[in-house]
Amino acid sequence: MTFYNYISAPTTIDWHMDPDIFVARFKERWPHAQIRPARDQCSEYFSHEWRLQIYGHTIGGMLNKINSGVVFYGDLEGCAAFAAWFRSIVPMEQPLIFSDDSQEMEIELTPNITELEIMARVFCI
Image (cartoon, rainbow, N blue to C red; front, top):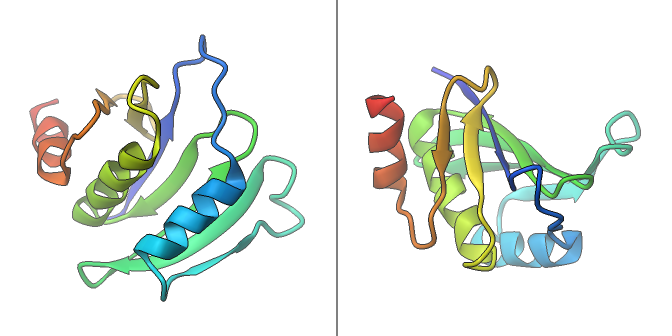
């Protein structure tokens, strides 16, 4: 099953992920993954797009350059792993929200959250 997700800061906070830092950390974590500048039709809103394998499943997504969030899709286990990693590269004091595309599910990504904790919260909602 494919899940479509977002991670972003609350709208009341003016925080931005530097795309160069994101790309560098992404390449450190997944050196064999594909990451590139967003294609023309997406470049107004997104700085980079990527595809990677987590647990044998493809996870794809884009870094939003307007609100410094990420939009991504894939199976739940892979998406939870990506969300936990993204939380780990964001300053601890920065709040982040993980939500699905319908925004029926919202999970606060606390510092040091694990993929298992994310999956447990998804199934409890």
